[in-house]
Image (cartoon, rainbow over all chains, first blue to last red):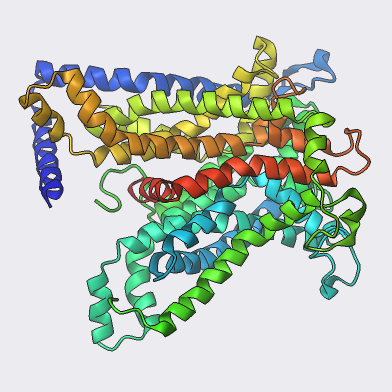
Length: 319
Length: 277
């Protein structure tokens, strides 16, 4: 109780400080600004050096012919690399594969994650136990889990490959079944993360509203769809945004499970192979830039079309 | 919600059991593989028929897993430490101070959090090769700091906003020096948030594969997840299954320990960072 009053006072005072922003800066204000910049400086420098600079460099490389196998032929080629990549069927197949993996896994994760969030939020026994368990897939190294899945689906070695459903064929050698396994590995690993984000949203739905709805005769399902879901919309959108952008980068699971064979190569895998096996910096950078643009477009659509509150805007979320 | 009926208990037990099976079966399967005797890998049984610790002994004695493991620990610890230090500065400024550029700072870190890491691989590969950072610890520590900073800044600033800063003033009124007030009042209040954030940042570094496999070429800097991928084929074992499974279990152990000890904190860290952004 006392803590709450202290906090509300703090908010009041910080609010009044913000209100005076129009007046000429006092010495205190000015030193506060300086301190703010100074404290942000190291983080800003690291972020600029390690990401902004490579992005710019990447854009420059993407406009050049630059193949490490033929260093003499280096030169400015304008948008030729973009034309090469965008007319290449491998690129578009990787694009389609990435989108299929993203959409299917995120849809399943949303449904399963919501269920898991409900269990973690509402269970009356062993709450800590359930939450601890759910964190295991979240924390486990993706590559380690991916090898587990790979062996599980390898004929003779794996317990899953023996299911009668497959009748002896190797599931990781066909496109559809490989994609299904990649998606399964993604879903298993990231559903708990989705569930945790959604649980945070569940926590802000007031218990009284649920009770009031129940009094008015709403069934549990109606309460869920009419009360809980609308109130959780911001949390759901943020969780979706995070997960979609994460799924578009899918790399580790594919690397281990198929390494892009049988038409399962994602954008990340294709870009990586172009660099490490192809040593083609020009084309590789072009792919990097195109991937960046794809991700930026998705984020833009989420924020503008769905109205996802950009995390970081101060007035979002629980206060 | 006051009275918990037996029926409720029973149905929640079922739900909890399903969650347990979901989370544990894939992990137990890797554990089982790692404990299988070499001759029984291809029997397909979930529970090993011939038990052995040989796979674990092999990866350290013949498989050369010690070095990658040390690389992983060293790189993740250093990157986490630096990210926490500079992230705390920024988070403090964002949580407590008014200054222009605050939103830009948050926006930039959000951008980086969403950035496709693989887009950085090509330029970083080239830059690091030309300045001699390729295949070194700093060559991995740098990108790790960068990619853990957004998480660090978001999570920590939401923790710091919750601290009742008036207590600092109160302590000063009671005669504490500014340093004492900071050291004995604020630090203990901020510590849980810092520890939580450090765990999340460590998990993220520990998990990385894209940078580890692209920016290293030998075991001098290659981290454990990348080294596991190279067990296949290149190793002197006839069948890398046991080694891969054993190594996978070894790198899972720290995560299990963290989760067991810090469950509450990890959950609060992830949820606070998410909702408050």
